[in-house]
Amino acid sequence: MNAVLRKIHGSFYRAIAVANARYRDDVLNLQAISLTYSTLLSLVPFLAVMFSVLKAFEVQNALEPFLAQMLQPLGADASEVTKKIIDFVDNLRVGILGAAGLAMLFYTVVTLVAKIEDALNRIWRLPRSRTWGQRITAYLSVVLVGPVMVFTALTLTASAQSYWLVERLVQIGFVSYIFTLTTNVMPFVLFCATFTFLYKLIPYTDVRLSSALIGGATAGILWQLIGTAFAAFVANSARYAAIYSSFAIMIVFLIWLYVGWLIFLVGAEVAYFHQHPSAFIREALPGGNGHRFQEWLALSALIEITRRHLAQTPPWQPTELAADLGVSSLDNLFDEFVRAGILLRSVEPEGIALARPPEAVPVKDILDIVSDSAVLAVENAGPAAHVLSRRDQAVQKALEGMTLRSLAGESPPAIVKFPQSAMANQAR
Image (cartoon, rainbow, N blue to C red; front, side, top):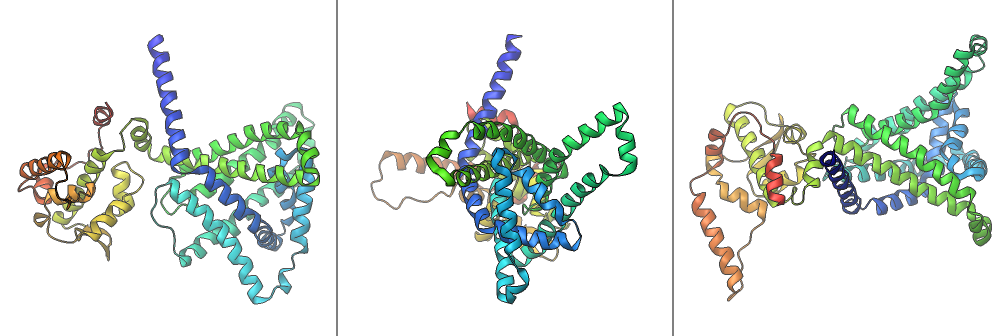
């Protein structure tokens, strides 16, 4: 029993350590602040575009209740903030803006979604984002299709309550309980669906639906729990009203915006680790994502690319190879080898391929690129440089004659992921 408790305690401690490391490495607090600032600039234009789209589908009346639900943690001030935002949207006349004004309106909206994509791409370790042409196409589904689906569901739920058959069924005790429970749970389900929709579509990579669902459910649960705590905080924060006077509502609104974006980013981290559990294992072990793992990753990726080359089959897709090796992205690694002239990005068929014959690629060159080793040009660099030089000479002698061709012939045909025991040994 004690051993089980120690194991649980150790796992919990490692999870907390990884969460803290990711929070610092991904600077989630700074990203949340950046998104809060972008939201302030883009909120009214974003809602104006959304309102125009919803009006075309005649579900625009659902915007205010949904906004009020999102701002519910603000307590009694939620209705006032919602009313002011809706008034801003109503006062924005899209028809009189002209072509330049309308273009600026859409640019502001696209910029907000681009900021969200950049934040998610950082979490997913993606080195590049979509081009502007790709963004316009991808963001149309986020800005246009997503709100219509959410608000249509809200409208149908509200209209169902007034349907005569539902009114009759509600009079039955058990059905009344089920209907009340469904109505109360529906906002939570819609929040989870919204988060899932964003996690699935916005990152510039293939996110599995199951991972997006796990991240969306996590963000939805955190939203409800932290929202309840925040509402209690607002209810007991009479001092803020005394200090900030009429600005108190704006201060509270800004704090909740920041907390909301932080919840969104935490849900994205959960989705990332669900899709790439090996990344969690590596980061949970001290040194599990260190130099030795990078060497193994580089050699394994190049061996698999070499096998495709020798078999004369279509090249690997970068995302496909990364998934088989249990990592989120290999783009940074591939960029290094492309610059070194070992790999190239093929267009037809699209993928990553060898730039020169595998027998002309020494293993020592690959390891040098990964370690970024450089010869010290300083005279009399001391005993430390002498030791490193002897180490390099020994490695070069041990690997003499080994090329990608020989490695591809020696290795087993199946991809073997970096063993956890090796990670543990490296951590010791």
